[in-house]
Image (cartoon, rainbow, N blue to C red; front, side, top):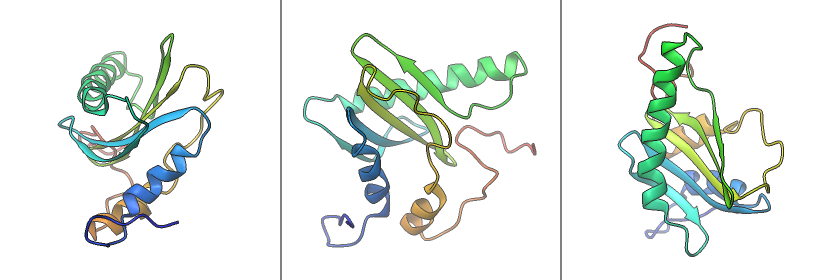
Length: 143
């Protein structure tokens, strides 16, 4: 089903997030700018998405610095397990991070490419393609 915005226009970003919300235990699916602002999101009542978005970016930046310092490379995805929540963060497009929030233990062995249709959704939303080799937080250096 295609979501529409307030003007009746199709919203491919919300469509992409709707698929994540269908996962049992999912409480929120957000697209977050590199400034910690929510670009698009779906959430259950009571989820503090603004705080999650702001803190997610700080966390990702710290982990990216760690990876570069220990020569581990660039971050592909990050999973944080808490007593009550699981948070998964993954690059979605240049300067955009996907943040998934679920009840603890509900995601099981969620792995692999968390954003398989990210380019199509992003391209449709902004009407311009993003280079495939770019990821949120990349410095632009070739691999």
